[in-house]
Length: 341
Image (cartoon, rainbow, N blue to C red; front, side):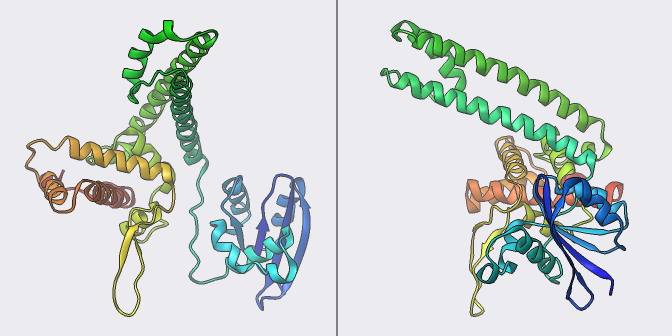
């Protein structure tokens, strides 16, 4: 019988493959497949469903397998774990491949959209920039912690820290002065790198028609627009905007039972970076409301008064996620009314 479903446990150099036929019986079991032999092995199989965990290199392999007519589905590793028969066989690559093969066949399994190469190029820019931002924050925190050992406590705001530390350089003993100078120079170099990536991302957003449409939404700038486009593409993997908001983690967790609905905090699932961009954009919307009287501003102002600042921020971020999906899904056919712009 022909193989209809294959599970692959991805790795750097040695992969595990588990395939089953239409009756669910194992028809292809290879616990050790080298990297150079994996693609030829998949190429000789008839078109089938290939399941993999969404980990490093998964999107690259998915694009390669699609060229041979296979349907590739990626899953979050936490959704595969329940299907691993660890009690019988323990944790190993072959058991992981079998669990992936079993999980990908479940009718209600949730899958990760396969990203194209151009999407990953943009996400590479964002990940690199975000790494520099985190390193800059760590550098200033390290600087603040070191000088506090000598009785100097400065404000958290970076501008005030850099301004006030100059006044205390003479109070620092020994080699501490050199350490402070090196840390400040390293932070300056990171600032230059971050500014360079900001310009590159902004240019990429301006050059893309879909990103330009996203930037017309309130609270969405070049960074958010390009990250959203690179993350969800055309939005065709989602049925509606609610699914996008839930995928990003901007919807409340549900703890309902006995016919009584109980909604908790937001789930914080999905891409934390994308969620943070939407939240920062929502905060910018609230801070820039002023006396605006358009429909969106009146709604945001009323929401803040009724539910508080942070709930309003999350609601605006979720609304922007849903609007962004509509813009990407329907393109020029989607239009915001002038009063809601």
